[in-house]
Image (tube, rainbow, N blue to C red):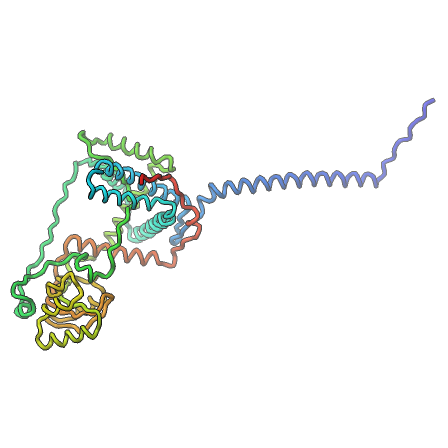
Length: 431
């Protein structure tokens, strides 16, 4: 007869141990799942941080307006694309006119300049330019809002059409804008101060008398303005359909940069808004200005200037002394005649004294960055400005206003911008 097995007795202690092991296994599984989720989450966050989230990070702030990484990168992409197009067009000109040594050298200089702007070494410079222009755009938008200045879709469309060479009402003919200058008669006093054969000098341009200008003229750089590759004139009429096709082609070339037609229109909107704010800021600039006519003798030290002043007071001829001693070679042989000039055209120390003198009066020695001057006032009058002088004064006032806004406490620039500047589209120079 088979032996019967004894049933195993499961105690409470054994059951408790089994339950503990089951709980431990469950916690282990849950912990593994949590760790896996965290790892995947960190990876996904890293991917998002380098793509979507990073593009939304601020690189600058103007008041409560944010400029993002995406804004900056898109601006740089567009700048680089325009510069490359400009380079390609200029290089075609170089190939066409390569046989002309003078013209060829000028074009090659332009090509080298563009190439320098697009180099990896200057990526930060181009990025900084793009960032500052985006900041300017926010400043101008804020000012436009405060002044109630608006922009319509029709104005933007008209500006785009003109930029692409399409004029719905025919190509406009620029009207001449001559400036009429008053022709003063020399007074008896003035006739005693200058040679008998002298005539009233023309009002000098701001570039005149380089020895006396307040700041050196900067070397111009290629401006990535928009657009740079507008269509060339053709022998056939440029119709509305042709304009739309050209814009479509233009946008098509930009698509690889993530640029859309709305992005292009936004650039035109910003430029038009800037023009309107510019006109509002400079509206009080008058087309005439108080100006003085002066001559000077420039020397290296105060002692020489004082000695010459003593000789002039004793009756020696100003013109002869200027020709012999003045270091301003641009006018020493003309008695140091500087012509007519308004405020802002000379260094401040010189200007302040010149405008305080009476006609015929000679100043004490005046020190500037160029040396020591004796200044004699020959005339003072309110005179009309030339078109270029008026434009320069407006530019100066607008730039001063804009710089004041840029320096405002509510404008912040974050260091992140220097690390996100793209170097695409890529560029291969021909030289």
